[in-house]
Image (tube, rainbow, N blue to C red; front, side, top):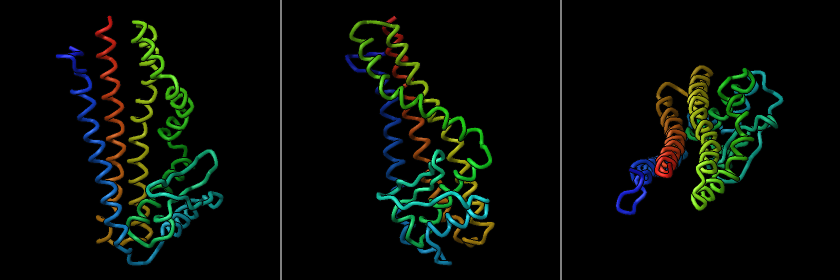
Length: 230
């Protein structure tokens, strides 16, 4: 039953637990990153040095590396073939810095190899951007006008965002797997540093799991609300 004693049960059953997971994931990644940002890697490599090494070792000499402001704002831009590293990751010789840099470099390697989930996710970006603008307009208008068609259209658009979050999971997990393998095989990290790098990458991966959970929870909530309108 979508509503119970005036409460949105979908919000209570799905959305609140997912948001709790998301808050925990954010807390976890921030604390793990901060912890290992203080732990220097034994060879003294900075994030930009590790990123450049991995890119060049994979024939990606043409991929530029840029420094950007903020923390945990690191990303690879496939359209411009640019790897952007936040200030702490770019310049500090820590376990956290080289782990994040290697992860983002993993996305560039995925792009080079035509990794299908990455291609699929990139293809969904324009649709997700469009849905972000109109999903809630359609749903709110549908609720106000009691129009099932408008609500359905909003749910379909929102489903594209959910699919994007789901496809993001293998993309991020694979990038982390590549990162850990490249760091180990190249000798950038030692065997006893490997669990520390894995801790950083695992904490970051949890944020994507949480984001997918929030999207799925919101979709289930909308489906419950739509069912109540039939």
